[in-house]
Length: 66
Image 1 (cartoon, rainbow, N blue to C red):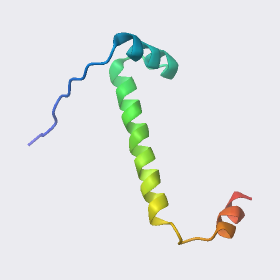
Image 2: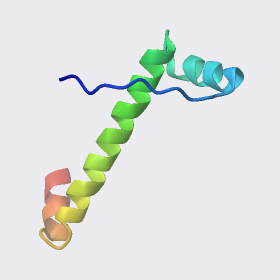
Image 3: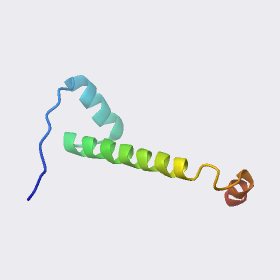
């Protein structure tokens, strides 16, 4: 069974259009999907950072950057 639900939010049109122009999004859906994907990536990155705290030394990181 498909459990997808629609969500309705109120956002001032000027704010939405400003973000759409800045992000070069053609549709509201494209903007929202992009913002959600970026947030999911940010959350994943933070999770990985929390899991690796104390696992590697700073010299390991410096070596990887060179």
